Image (cartoon, rainbow, N blue to C red):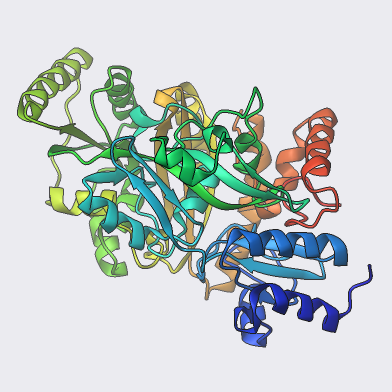
Length: 489
């Protein structure tokens, strides 16, 4: 069927109502770009569905009228990676931010069910009242979608609870590119979700149905295979007592060796390493204060938290302290004392609270992040390479994942967006260093924007053909977010 604008808008209006559709030039311009270096196209309109049945109808309409659907989960100007802007003509933005219900909270099974419009600033305080802790990335943006963050596999700061690469994502309800609705894991049945919950089930197990676990192909697909309309997420009980450790050194290897031992024996909850620039950006908001703090910090900072719960919480803290002292003595480590006081309250704040604006933008006003997975042994080599390429304003974040079996390492390239020459230099270096990183063994598990082609050029044609076959099964008409990953035709 050939699409014309009148027929197209009439059908969308029937599905969502005229109040939930915008063709304002200002809105269209906002959704045609983001903070990446990728240039997008102007969408035909923005549509705000309010329930999954409307999403189904919109996706089926896209198949009939041959237009594209770009799913996004938030109303935010902080979109970063070029995966939510139109790459093709005849595209609409499917904004899921008005699907913002917290559908259930189950303390006994430590699980929450949320729609894609639920943000960190909304969910965190509600869970705190229930004594529950959301497994967070480092200081997420307040307006960021909790569900989308889990779908994008942003690393959480507690590797001991990171058992699978999919954590904390559990079950999902998804509308495939065909317009078919599907539920994964134990949510698939038998019975409706209400019937399951009445029987005491909590949609905790993401595996299945049968031997097929479709959530694994949806997670990380950047909205190119399906639109997720709700998900269940893993939670933990909030500790009753916690103790902060902040250790500093100019020698990254000392900190890496210690955190390796801490993780091997599962001694702590939050555990990660930051360089001086990133830690200062997390602690301060003013540019001058950030620069001053960087000058008073050692080059590398290991932060970890030990926790206790229940009546024996203090006993647990006591034996954990003893074990940590023994490990430090065995390694022969002696760390520098901080030149500036950083309180436990400040550290707890960026570990447990969202921020209004992205903290990586605080120093210079803009950033490009480069992140990948690697092994423990290769971390120093990647750090040395990047510090040679980017001599200043480089933030580094090292997060062990999957019980420490691998590492997420992130390099934040901070720059002034008003300085055209600096921005051009960052773009050129950003693109130029990626091939070298991959040659060194970096695994880009989330290839975004301009560098997706570089990543897939390092994979065999058989892998790309297999991925395109998967795309053809779940989105045969290429209506969902065309152009991302290797789906560029």
